[in-house]
Figure 1 (cartoon, rainbow, N blue to C red):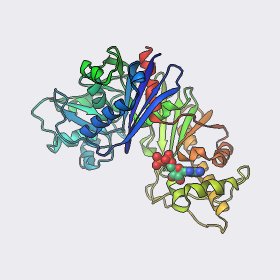
Figure 2 (figure 1 turned 120 degrees about the vertical axis):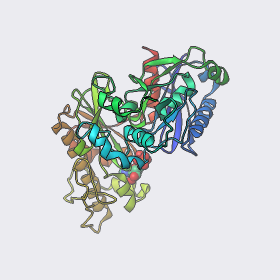
Figure 3 (figure 1 turned 180 degrees about the horizontal axis):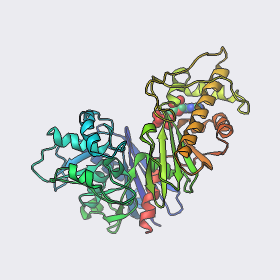
Figure 4 (figure 1 turned 45 degrees about the vertical axis):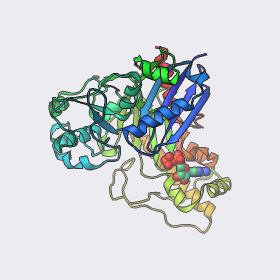
Length: 417
Ligand code: ADP
């Protein structure tokens, strides 16, 4: 027997999942991340490894890691971090956006306070990274994988997208290289799933992993969640029905439209186009508990369109599929019946989802053929039926939605290569 192991480092916790060659889960573990620090990530990695039974661990042929997109750090030649990591939601880089606008192509996706490139330039300019010694700039997943394979600095082109890496030409553009100080080494970037190196002997011995266990290049947490679904063909998509609605559609063409926050990741020979609405399940939770959601949903007739037209936002502002920073939440009129009200909310969210896929297609993406659902709302069959009617395509609940499962599949694809 051989197994492949995936790790997911999300915003609140870390998980590991081991699968066999048929993709069946054979072991798993999770832990909250008490601190988003390199030490916290390392402790979580080692803790999770220890939770995987030795019978599985000792037969692992490949490991991959996903990290939170645009959480990044700098380290020295030994891999020791020289300052606290800059987390995905850190906005300090807003201070250098004018400079970035002057050097990056118009509407480039790095022109955002949360992009890794903005964070890097801000850290260099502000003295957050001392610049007189050579430094390696890495994403969270790159650094955690380094703990296992010992190579600096290697990353994958999913994490590197927000650093400005060009997924079409597979290199860092000149405008970017000109802007980064010469003392900073950017990650050498490979395709997710590429074998990087065998596990370090010290780590292999300590955790009883086989000496030829391969560490393969990882991905971001949200792409790992997409990988967990069966979607692999152009036109197949995953909608994440969590606190917000997140759409990802496999397309033959690359589409980017900064106005709507749409951008595409390279996905083998295809492109993974995505957009994220601020509307979503968080608004449902404002009115109903999860149990109430289930009970009321059972009383909705999904074949009948609700006449109620809402825009369920927690606060004003929307980017996709409508770009309007002032867009106000619309949650009135509220009918007396909670069943009618929830029907209106679910119907309105389904219309936003349909409009989202329309927006991706208008931008040039491959037409939608099938949608896999993930997130808390995916368990609601009434909502799935409403969505099927509004989207006009098959809607299927994804059998696996854990990012760590997608990362384990990525490890398996690398092991087989
Ligand atoms: P996130 O990770 O984005 O916080 P989850 O994927 O855990 O979100 O999903 C949580 C959301 O799922 C909540 O906002 C809740 O409103 C929604 N949810 C939970 N159960 C149901 C249900 N039966 N029908 C519709 N939505 C649901």
